[in-house]
Amino acid sequence: MTTVLISGASIAGTALAYWLREQGITPVVVERAEGLRPGGQAIDVRGAALTVLRRMGLEPQARELKTTTKGMSVLDGQGNELHRSEEIVYSSGRLDSDDIEILREDLVRIIHARNDGVEYRFGDSITAIHQEADGVTVEFEHAAPRRFDLVVGADGLHSNTRRLAFGPEADYLHHLGTYLAVFGQENYLGLDDWQIWFNDGVVGGAVTTVRNNAELRIYLGFGSEPFAYDYRDIKAQKQIIADNVTGLGWEVPGFLERMWDSEDFYFDSMSQIRMDSWSAGRVTLAGDAAHCASPLSGQGSSLALVGAYILALELGRTGDHQVALARYEERMRPFAEANQALATSARMENIEEMDPAAMTNAVDAVKNAIDLDAIVE
Image (cartoon, rainbow, N blue to C red):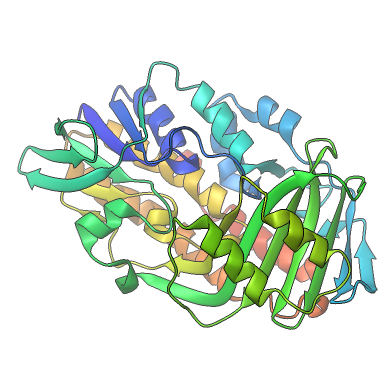
């Protein structure tokens, strides 16, 4: 095993590139976007994933960039406070834990910075995969075809690699009943290290402070059965939010107005990917492409970091990709499935009835459900 093509330059893809090079394997990363994707929500690094980050030497940098939340308020749909907490918040759990809550873009950036010398091909994507007994020939939208020993799809919930190698997304995607948008704004509300969650039945959201209170991350969502939309038409996705997040008071009308000018808007369904196998010959999947648990789990980034680590170590152990991929899935699948089960028990329809302590205890029960020390024996 000498060369691996990774499709996707988010957490799973950048972390895999790092660990593959540590194993003496040459990674090449292809990413549809023109550069590292900005925006996104704050994500959590917990348990075994924190160990992976520590072994990369990135824990100090991540802690310098972590969010500094002091508590949260929970409001009804018209802005009346239902309760508040200065001990536990919905986004990251107990405020006195050792976990790291960090913006997705910041975590990707510091991992990418450790990958100096790794070949990244931004602004391109895979169009065809041709497997042979001794390698894979890959065709690209722009670049000339190239041959690799292995292809890894780390390209998210709507994985292009998965579609090419395993078939239609509909065969694997399981909708959890909610759609969510997130975008950034300056902190025009003047919040001080605080989160505000609001809900009115199947419509709601949150606003949190980031970057030392200089910015906000605004979340807006609604419950719905699955429907078709263009994943690349941002204007149309904003219209979906405008059409469905209606009737809320407080600051929500202002959020909707500012949404139209946001440049880092993200919208998608709360969904999971469930597959009987993550590998087909010399193509395998990592992160959300393989086993998306949805943001409801709070464990997506941890799954991405741990999965990248395990996959790279198993590939480095043997020249037989079939053995390596079987070991990767054997070790990783129980952890992924435990986190998917966590998400399906954390539905968000009635936020005023949610018990943050119970949610935190559930996350604690699965965040260390994998023994990294056993993997490196």
